[in-house]
Length: 441
Ligand code: SF4
Image 1 (tube, rainbow, N blue to C red):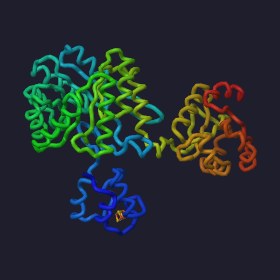
Image 2 (image 1 turned 90 degrees about the horizontal axis):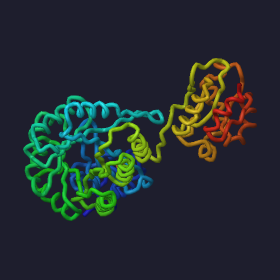
Image 3 (image 1 turned 90 degrees about the vertical axis):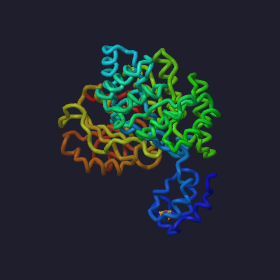
Image 4 (image 1 turned 45 degrees about the vertical axis):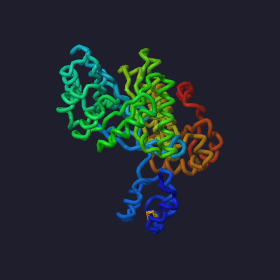
């Protein structure tokens, strides 16, 4: 049973120093009780108190690490807007051991090409799931070794045969793959294999009752590095299971199901598969195994994942410095926008399309969009003039024209007055920049 905030407070140092990020020990205790803080944030907790607080401090969903740098679970809230989600869903592409050598190499090359760039950030697919479907332990081990040799991505080894798993895992244990699945039939051998090699194990059972029972039995073997698979393979059942498990872990602190959950897509048509995977990324899979390895299929899923796992309190921002697009010169137009990544890159993309080399100065608005920034007093003429002076735009262009977003036309008079430059009101939406830019030439 989890401790209440007041019970935790009794164990706190009561220095009220604020070093944990909240002003008082009581506020910290309350945050700890609701799973919104980590005990490590307080440097003054005594060892005795730490032991007493272990159960309260343990995250409602255990963090499971595997592979290159994959971290599953360790989430503390049900909804992103309650605080944030911490660990983006790990996406793995499945590779069957029934592929021929040529097919295998082609698949690996395709997976290695899954690199994405969006709003200034780089992304790649997280891992590869090697699936034993051949029934041949030697082939499974060989395919796992080939995949491991060809890529440094996180590995998931999937086989129901503990002997086949043992053979495949032995040379790859240092890569810390996730292995599975341990079922009612093989859990002792599979969990012991995970324990001996210090790698996490997928526990699989059909339905939540059977899953809870199996997790308890597996824990009795003295190991707790688990990822759960509730066995469902249809979107409706999987979504229901993922939601129940997350609610039980977060709301009830139900420890047997307080582990990250893995989901597998069932659809074979790529568009349907991506839609299915999107549901699991949104709610609440820590890892999803997909079949498609086509970049065009996966881009929307990567975008969704990026959006869901961006901290809502810390929007993605670009550096608020002068950016140049193309071969700028002293006649290049000068655009002002905000440093919210989505806004900046929309403007930059349209300026690029216009084929007129231009300067863009994103004002530091704490990553908010134009209207939000203006409403919050973060996109004021004084601030824009300050940023213009700091970036030295006056020395880079011989004209004295500032192009501002149409949504803030209202600041044009004061901006001209303070800067001594002519303010040109640009389009409201970045999509209007291409046609607007023609009026500049
Ligand atoms: Fe209290 Fe520790 Fe936070 Fe300081 S850092 S306010 S002692 S909980």
